[in-house]
Every structure is written in structure tokens, then in C-alpha cells.
Image (cartoon, rainbow, N blue to C red; front, side):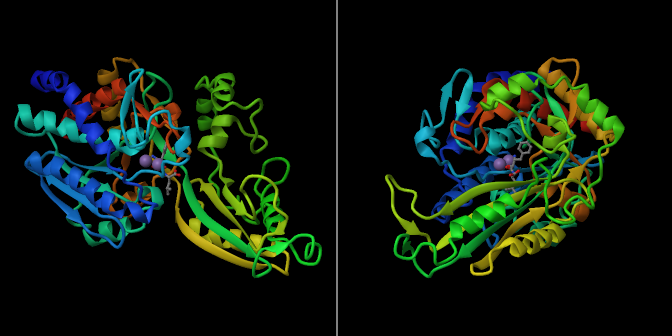
Amino acid sequence: MNESVVQYLDEHADRFVEELKEFLRIPTVSADPACKPHLQRGAEFVYRQFANLGFHAEIVPTAGHPIVYAEWLKAPGAPTVMVYGHYDVQPADPLDLWTTPPFEPTLRDGCLYARGATDDKGQVFTHIKSAEAWLRTVGSLPVNLKYVIEGEEEVGSRNLEDFLDARKDLLRCDVAVVSDTSQYGPNQPAITYGLRGILAVEVTLTGPKKDLHSGVFGGAVANPASGIARLIASLHDDQGRVRIPGFYDDVTPLTELERSQFRDMGFDEAAFKAELGVSELFGEAGYSTLERRWARPTCEVNGLVSGYTGVGPKTIVPSKATVKITCRLVPNQDPQKLTQALHDYLKSQCPPSLTFEFTNYHGCPGFVLDPNSPYIEAASEAIRDAWGVDRVRLIREGGSIPVVQTFKEVLGVDTLLLGWGQNTDNLHSPNEHFSVADFHRGISASARLWQKLADLKR
Ligand code: BES
Ligand code: MN
Ligand code: MN
């Protein structure tokens, strides 16, 4: 790669971290209505990054949080790359488990600690700083770049599809690049060729119109907390299989080749158990841990609320009980169809004397990329050079990024998932962090990627 670009990255490394800290100080929690003004500030921060580099940039309002769109199209004949990322973050709770406050970014043991450090502000920032390095040294980029940085990924990207639809022509590109996933392990960079989809719902059961004295009334009415426990218990059999009728009908099974590739990954179960603090692993019978995490559908309870949860006892029959559930889906499963199946099944399990309320939050299908795509090889070379390793793994992952399938459907392009994070970065958890070394390697890989993709077209 161009020497002056490499040198620029080196000379400005510390400032890049300082600017990332500034980004991380903005509490862009998309799920929290109280944070709405901060999401606007987050969008403005991203906008200014691009505007300062001479990109054509705009803040596009949506029914929810704004989308930042930016483009630099002065490389005629060169490929056009779409970069997607998100500036919104997950809620920081539980706050008391953070060693340093979530929105006061702090350097510790070579990592930057803050909500959003790895998911996704730190990762998305690598693709901004790589463009800066080219523009401030060479004065131009080897490819055309379009960036879509949204503020609603963590709540299901509700308004993104409309934006993509409305601007289909403007957004035309050859390939999309997303850094919002993880490496296989420390210093083991990976390209992710598959992600799971998701469906997210909430169920509330209501019994008596108010909480009741459990001595005076208990035994004479159905208890909503017991009702919700029944629903939850009905979701799985004791082999860890999901019992929703039809749940597995459309699943594209893993090929024998993939199963053997997963087996050859040398996955360390003992280290995994230690990392999670569990004595045993548990999941769908007949599948390995990597298969369960990357390529099998699941149904998980995410939250459960009912009755009195304060200190000490309180003798009541609660009026309501609520459960939040998500299913992870694999390619060929339809989120809408399965949301209906889940609804029908849970309703059938609900004691008749409780009222059943069902909220459908969001959903997206699973994703797989053809592992033989030439873009994968180009990205792999860029990553090898930046990390100084001789191989880049090809993995699947279990998380979801709703837009990747939409890119395929609306824009007809493949997405390169180039994750600079680690599964141990505590994404969505207290003490989220991002390795400063991975941040810089990510910037370097991104800067190299623009060149590799340009070379590919020639
Ligand atoms: N960056 C994650 C997705 C991810 C993380 C993929 C690690 C692979 C490895 C993303 O921000 C995320 O959290 N997505 C949500 C989906 C959304 C619809 C709420 C998820 O996976 O829970
Ligand atoms: Mn993310
Ligand atoms: Mn996330």
C-alpha cells in the first residue's frame, strides 16, 4: 500500500483514539426515548467527520433516529463500495457493574472501555479514519465510497429499509462492507460469511386488574407469573429442541463440508466454559457448540418481569407478567411466518383465565455469503497485511445485522463482514471495550482494502 498512507496512520494513531473517545462520550442509546437529543448529536458528530474530509454528507431524518449518508465519488471507473455501520448503542445497564462509567471512555490494559467501544462506534470509525488517511496524503481514494451510518440498529433498523428503497439508485454499489462482528479469537482475524436472523416479541399475561393479597385471594384466581412460567417451559423439550410447531421446517441444514470445517476450527470448549463461568454447556442435542451458536435456530428468554422484585417478602398475586423473547433464525427461515407460529403456540399454552397480549418488535432473516466470492479474497489479503498473520479464518457468527439481507434484496450486492472486535469485548454487557491495537489494525486493514478492491477490478 501507499507508504504515505501507512505513515499517516502511524503519526495520527493517538489522535484517532482521542476522537473516538469524543464519539463514545455521546450516550446514543437508541432504545431510550430520553436519549433522543444525544442520537441527534451522535449523527452530527459522524456528519462532521465526513464533511471535514470533503465528502458530500447529509443527516437524513427518519421517523426514528437520523441516518448519516456520505459519499466520495471521484474515482471514475473504480469500484464503488458501500460502508454500513451504526452509531447507536445498547443501554448501559446495569450501571453498578461498570468499573468506569459507560460514557466516560477510559484506557485500561490496552483497551478502550465504554459503551459502543466495539459495537459499533470503534469499528465504524476505522473506515472513516482510513478514508481520512488516503485523502490527507494521496489526496484521493482508490475506490468510490458511500457510507450509511444509522442510529437504529440496536432496535431492529426499523426505518432503514425505507431509506434504502427510496434511494436505491443513489446507493448503487459493487459491494458492501460492514465491521460490526468479531474476530475468531485474539490475533485471529476472520471474515464472517454467515449471520443468524432474529425475531423479537413480548408477551404479557394479565389476571386480576390489580395486585392482590395472596392470602385473601390466592388460590382462587390464576397467577400470571405462574402462567408465564408455563409458557416459557413449553418452549423447549429436554433435548434443547424448540417445540414451536414448524420451527425447523424451513431450516437449510449445514452441509457436511461446513460441519467438517467447523470441527477443524479447533474450538476450545474448556476455555469457552471458563470465559462464561458455566460448568456445563447446554443446547440442541446432536450439534456441536459452534453449530449451535452459528447455524442452528434458537429461542431465548431475554427478560422476565412480574410481581414484587424489591427487597424482602411481599405476599401478593401479581396482576401481570411479561416475558421478552427472541428467536435466532438461520437462512431460509421466514421471520414473519415464525412470529405467527410463536404467537399461535404461546397462545395455545396460555391458561384460559389469563388475557394474552402479544407484541411483535422486529425481525430479519439469516444471511450467508458465497464463500468463493472474489471480494473475500481481496479483503483477506488486506487483513493479512494489516494483522501480519498468514491466514484469515472464514467463520459464521450467531448475531444479527438486519441490513445485510436488505442489501442483497434491495441493492443486489454482497456484504463483506469484516469484524475487528472480539467476542470477549463485552458487547451489550457491562465493561464493553475495544482493543486499541485492534482499532489501529482495523484502520490499516480498511485503508488497504480500498486498494485491494480497486486492484480487483483492473
Ligand atoms: N454487532 C451486533 C451483531 C453481531 C455481534 C454480529 C457480534 C456478530 C457478532 C449488532 O449490533 C447487534 O447487536 N445486533 C442485534 C440485532 C438487533 C436486531 C437488535 C443482535 O444480534 O442482537
Ligand atoms: Mn453492532
Ligand atoms: Mn449490538
